Image (cartoon, rainbow, N blue to C red):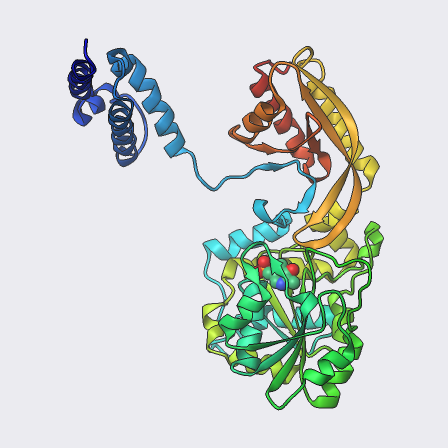
Length: 477
Ligand SMILES: *Cc1c(COP(=O)(O)O)cnc(C)c1O
């Protein structure tokens, strides 16, 4: 057979194969029995049949048997199952990173969730003043609490901290100069870069100092008649070590007041409690930053604060008033669910012990190593026997991270269950646990999959065990 003839032969069989693909209506007849919204069923059928077509065209060949009903129907069922599975799902975070930006950052306490359900399913006084019967403002609902907890004169809350920074710059510095230290021109989470946010707001960036060192005189020399703000940005996710120098907030506040310039600090994480109690380095609390005399401070609701996604803006009354009046505020405003969650969290902070116990982010940071170890032992007891010969399991000392771009390099001593599979590669185990219907996310280290138990809730231990049994195809009892 010449090459040409062979091609012709293939083309012939290709045409035949294409013809052998069932028609959509025919296929729908085969799967009449399945449950599910008809549009998803049809979408799955069309997708599957189109895939068959493409693979025949691409591979220039194929087998007729692959188009048989008993082959295609299970493939369809898998596809439909995938379409019926919600895309936004819960996962078990066994990474030990507490404020995990990719896994939803902070978790809300149950009481806060109840409050969310309440305002979500009923009408509320979101913007209705119950005293006057007139239109009210959503910000006033948490402003008093925020002031009480931090000593700020006034405050408002927007969608997230990036929005908070944008709004502050837009209000105070549009078309004018803002002085920032070169070492603080950070990028957070890949898309939030201080210089770019500044550009969007229309503020003009005046960088001063060197990457590793900035002195008060650098700020002082850069001040001119166009200057409207001194901005300090928390370095959050990185650290300059060695020969370094930053201007302290009190010095900056002093400089600002001598020149009549507001000082704004983007604190990023922003904590209400002293972090040294968790064995972490000292970071000024929001209250301390306010006390130092900053004009405006911004921080996230869902990082160290442990609440819902939000951007908190606190500071001097006259400036906050201007920020509230900025029309951009309307586009960045906080929604009612967030507000409900935030108020619950803030009320917990009125009693710090309650906050430490009930706000999951704080509770996980404060969890002693022995308590994490207990959780690890509970998981081990469940899985050791059933996994015998399939996976070696052991307890290991590891380090958890606070995460959320807060405090790089700082570890919390923790305990993990290490899994060393004997019947598959560790990458395969990692993938299968991740693709389980309740995904379990750990991290691979030295041929083992580590499940850091600090971020695994008590009621998730049995679920992790179940996922492991499913992956190793053993029964748990
Ligand atoms: C995290 C962070 C932001 C962004 O906050 P979001 O709440 O994620 O919008 C801005 N600035 C600093 C310093 C941060 O750490």
